[in-house]
Image 1 (cartoon, rainbow over the protein chains, first blue to last red):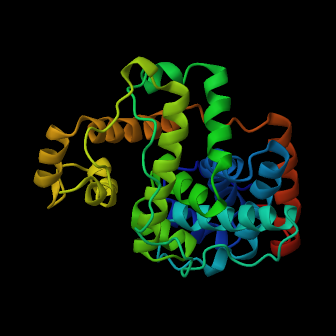
Image 2: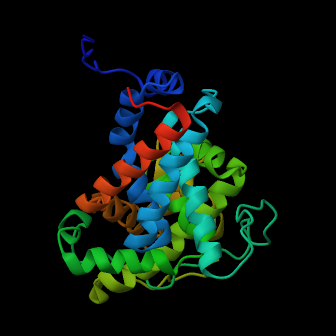
Length: 214
Length: 82
């Protein structure tokens, strides 16, 4: 009789190695570790549950297909989130009837610091983010605000600011240069700041620069 | 430092105000420009708000379906699930 070996806490990389050798338990442990994160990223990029489920499933199916191609050049998390992001972007393109090519082209016209969106509505918020986050309607509002961003900005914001990946990891995951990630992130942050401050800013504290801004 | 220059340097300052060579200049600008200080605060609050939000829970019925489909594909590739 085979004695089940208890799965001791082990690294993600070790689990990948075991799974690549055909260990289904190790694979399942990887799914358990990352499924909520993958689903969350997918949901934030595609904006709806059914599509997020499809992306999550595609991501873990891809993991089976490509499990022996993991080279350890990035962390397992970065690798998996890259797969998830690519599936999510592909689905968005398909949904919009566009060719499913990469959205991450490095040569977009606005990938520089000229004509940055300038802050217009400047005011202190009426409540802390922690308090606001408790309210269901706020969660909907911030989800809607995120969905108004162009895909290329939303994806960078999700990976860098929500998932907490570094600029370098975000660049790796999206096949972009770090410079492009930084400028897209800045644009995403400025656009979201504008929208959220219009919703949560206290009108009474609104400020108007007293000198030429820009 | 002008407000325009500040805008370009905003990312680094928002991420880590101690690690930036330009931070002294940045801080000096902020001290004399309340609107820019509020913009920096607003950006930090925006990021904090997204981070504070609950992660999207995975529907339990989906997890069951997911696990079944993964097991099926695994068996196709490896022929076993042990």
